[in-house]
Image 1 (cartoon, rainbow, N blue to C red):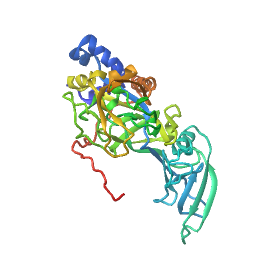
Image 2 (image 1 turned 180 degrees about the horizontal axis):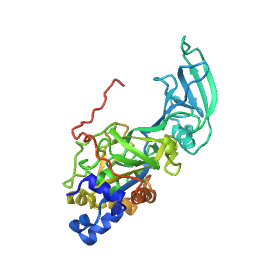
Image 3 (image 1 turned 45 degrees about the horizontal axis):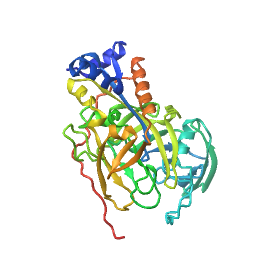
Amino acid sequence: MRTIEQINEKILDGKANVCTIEELKTQVKKLGIKKTYEKYDVICTGTFEPMESSGAILNLGHTDPPMKIRECWLDGVPAYAGFGAVDLYLGATAHTSYNPIHDHDNSPLPEKGGSHVIENLIAGKSVTVKAIGQVTDCYPRASFESSISIDTINQFYLYNPRNLYQNFIVGVNGGDRQLYTYLGPLLPRLGNAVYSSIGAMSPLLNDPNLEVVGIGSKIFLGGAQGMIVWEGTQHFPLQKRLPNDTPIGPASTLALVGDAKKMSQEWVRGCYFKNYGPSLMLGVGIPFPVLNEKIIERCAVQDEDIVAPVVDFSIPRRVRPSFGLVNYAQLKHGKIKIEGQTVRVASVASMYLSNKVAQTLKQWILDRNFTISEPVAPLPLDRTFVSQDGVI
């Protein structure tokens, strides 16, 4: 048994043995669990994939005369202004313009969203501000137009309510028209399949019961140090699981926070899914302290040992029909069989950049610029999944 304190001492002394999750799996095959445990102190995991439940909190600073902002647009994208006078929350999926009664006629939606504004600010670019205020005795100003940059605002940090899904789904379309989804276009009559996970390399699939990560765990977020601050929204650890404890569909999630002023455009990128809307491509990495052999055993899981459900998006219901389960070795092969039909497969997550996140985090630790933090509280394991049934 090791402790985090012992591992941090080795990191600060430059004596820690660190590997990426990809390197770890290779070593387990060569050396076995026990010898691999003896060899390494820290395992670095990483992913780079769309994480649309993300956003940024900004504090603009007060105008003169002061203003209580109630409506605001950053580069034409609406930001939420319903708390402090000059505090804003910019959601990654907010559109430059959006009609909530969109008639689904496949007319193109705006391609710029909150994610692109966040990326531009991180890149040091200037962003326009237009604001309308509620006039009061202490906030007499009614409107404001200007521009801001990362250097002319106070706080600017990512606060992401739901990141790092522990497993997800494979989307297909059994209908007769093309569908535009959060996984991208799905071709009719099972013309393609799309998933958003890196399988056995994915951080939380290597800690299925959340025994290593917890509230207060320090992480790599967007190229800077971040932190796990709570369970993520739609956190569902009670998802059905295989004997190896990996879930058979979407399960646990994390809420993350980090200083966007220290982040890099390389790891925070706005993206757009045609006729669906903007999202945020985000690099996230989690270091696992090698405290015992069980951690190595969990991290040795392979793609063929993890499955995801194949879900038919042509049925517009909350619970869509499934064509069964496929493992990630099949998905990464690029083709799967669905009812006897060969279907091409692609991922919206980047294996290359995910491994680069893990490699970058590994180098931070080797350079003594990153130590492991002890969680202040465990993540809950008893959350159920509540849904809504209103009148249609």
